[in-house]
Image (tube, rainbow, N blue to C red; front, side, top):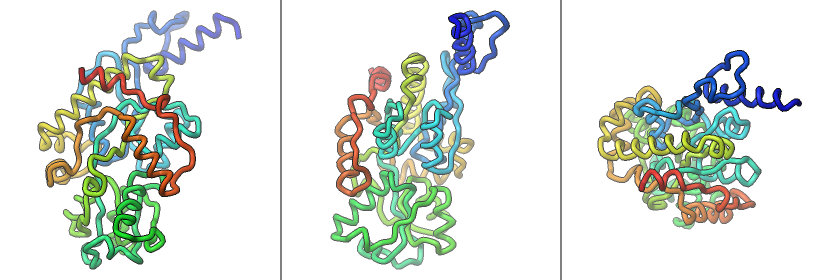
Length: 326
């Protein structure tokens, strides 16, 4: 390829990222007046990903955020792996696994802490962890924080994982599956615990914060090439999500109302998750700290969820969120 052709194709690619079409003869996005970089950010309609509402409530100078909703963890992981999205909220074990397999992503901030529940069918007769023996339990992915939490709480109650039947299931399908007697229990992110209670389909048996206090779960991952090419855009995105985190903590009722378009749940259900009880899910301390990821990798090894370990020095990138906090 000739140098001029290379420059032209590069400019077209950059302009495409910014959502623009270059005029004939232009070979630089700067000459075309590119001001905003369009970033596609994947999320699931769960309370863990509530910070995605930053796309609607914030004003951006250098970036345009396009939220893309997915229904399952395999789908969003595959989209990030294929480069169909520029970044996305991933379960910590999924992000670590992608990094181990060579996907060039970095964790730039946590999405939250805590925020998941063990929910049991309303009339199941399950009132304690030991009552789960012989029952069917849905998890959103084998490579999920929820699979770790389930195995951790079973071990703490002297139970073997072979004593329950674990089923992989997309989070939005779980309430219906419980209502139609396909499963007895599930462990997943909110709002599906609060939703099951509101519909009188199920009841919350245990909050994840009571299994592993202040645990990490979902993490915002960005492609390295996006971080390297557009650091100002990533910085602005993280800043906006940091401000949104403080907004959610300060005014959960308003945050719940503002979540309807992207999360798709009734505001009162989201508000219940944010407030009852206090600490059910938290949006403070969103720095991706090494010790949290080391703990997750340790449990992945202990429970046979994964064999390899990610290079955390290469995977964790806290410079944007620390700049937001300063």
